[in-house]
Image 1: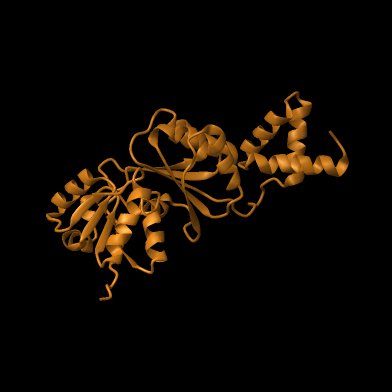
Image 2: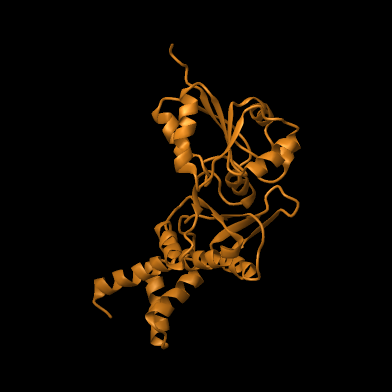
Length: 287
């Protein structure tokens, strides 16, 4: 007898306020054959808050066992089970477990659907006050300082609004690195504890936000950063940038410090000023 494959359901869960739970979530929790949860203890608190008693089997599915447990869940799906995947907050697979399972299910031609729910990414973008017509999600930055700078330089010329997740104890360092790479005057917003009791959205230039974060910040953090816009009226062109750097060098500053200072003044990435200086050097042969 041919067995009809089941369905994988990705369910968004509240990122803060439990009342944000989508109505379908309670129904799916109550009727799923298998519930794969990032944290079974949080799942228990969620079901109690929603007044739901799961009828299906509950298994853990987190970063540490994601690879090993995926085949087991795919086997259940192939056997006709309805598998519900939930993470601690937000939508599964968005910087949370889920991608491997979705990819494996798609490869086996198993139906994948979703219960749309709260998203820290979309909520932060909407609240940031920055352009939302085009944006990109960059997830978490690397923990190591050198790798963090390299990643930021990769998106230094990104024109879309950028969204990052960050741990509170690394926020100050990340904002300082963003200020260095993107320019201290680049607009940004730090969204903290979204939809929770102590929700806060701090908006301002990256340089000011870095100074604020240096005092210590707590909670779940999402950072939204403005992309590179068209050169504003009055913004210095390449020739003016080179002139400013040379003026500082003539006053005794080292080239590296001069470039950094000019970039900060203009609100531009240091790479842009550096490239202008190198291009001018190649053009006129000056040192």
